[in-house]
Image (cartoon, rainbow, N blue to C red):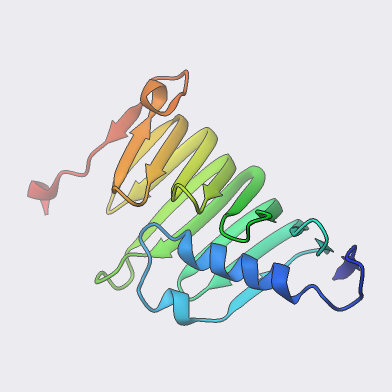
Length: 177
């Protein structure tokens, strides 16, 4: 792994990495309660950590895990606001993917993919942009853009999420089981 620290002093990248941890743990919309307590592992071909601008970028086969959460992307960028109160994360890939085990449903995962996955910790919104797809319990939701409002547990797709494509929803038939 290649590390470049662009801050004023070498070895001061810990605050940006901690920000990644706080952001990643809180971005889990369907989180297992224990996920936030687990260590975060970041694997990438390179990391560019800029303490001065509170920004870190991980490139090349990026895999971030924490408990049951797994995020895979070509590039992941984390930006901490100057006020230190807001974090934003962008994962880009062909596609970027995430999965997380559902609380109370051992072995059941929420899975999503899109060309870009954005998370804004201030609004607690997760945006899947570009060939967006979300699935849970055999049901799926697809559109060019899907927005998940974590605070209000709302999912929007298509025009409702400022997208252009129609929404396609496939609902699992629970009576067939």
